[in-house]
Every structure is written in C-alpha cells, then in structure tokens.
Length: 145
Image (cartoon, rainbow, N blue to C red; front, side, top):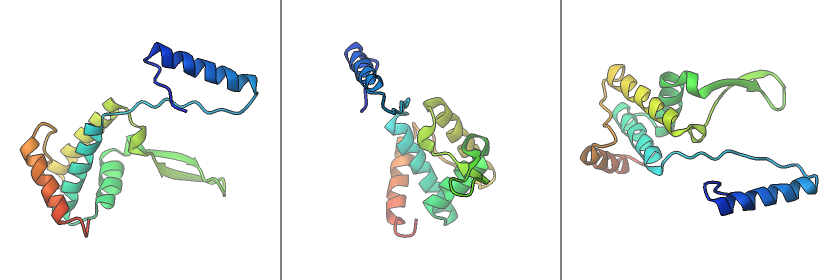
C-alpha cells in the first residue's frame, strides 16, 4: 500500500496499518518513494533521444553507455553480489532511484559531456521551442531508435 505521509490523516492510516502488520508478526518492507517531477523525467528522455538521433545510436545505448556509464559513472555504478553465483558483479542503478537534486546534477553532467566530447548541444529545460522540435525529430526516427 502507498501512503502520502504529508497528510496527517494518511500518516495515521499508515501508522495503523504498520502496527496491524507488526501485531500479526509478518514480514514487511517499507520504502521511501521520493519522486522527481514527471517534467524532469520527460526532459531527460527527450535529451537522451536527441543525442541518440545526432549520433545515430539507439536511445537505450545512449541512456546506458553515455548517460549512466560515461557521464554519471559514480552515481549509477555499484558493486553487488550476483544472486545465483554469489560473485561480485558491477550493476547500474535505475534513474528512478535518484532524488530530484541528483537527477539535476546527472543531467548537467550529461549536457556538459554531450557539448564537449560529442559536440552536440542539448537544450536547457526552458528552451520549449527546441524541445518541441526534438519531439518531432525523435518521432520521425523512432523506428530505429
């Protein structure tokens, strides 16, 4: 179940529900679901798509190899144990796990890398006309992206 603890009523419902589960001596998982804005997420996917179009690469390639591994390696890469073998393995964190401020920093690093190494300007979030044009270009090229 999800509860918005910013509301006193919801917070009380959450407390009551958890208390009931504790009473039943069940196993529970509590997650902190801090979300970044949908606008921030949509903007990131637009600029990833734009760089993909410019480089002739897939969106998945640009997202994984350039955005996560190259521009934001320290933020996304972590070592963990493989569930079956128990061996240490390098994993990539999902961008859904980032806070708004981490997302902002990751986007800034990505834009800087794109303009430097890849000589491609990625528009700022307030460049509405350019971003609308990017949507059109991505749509035109979506079969190979």
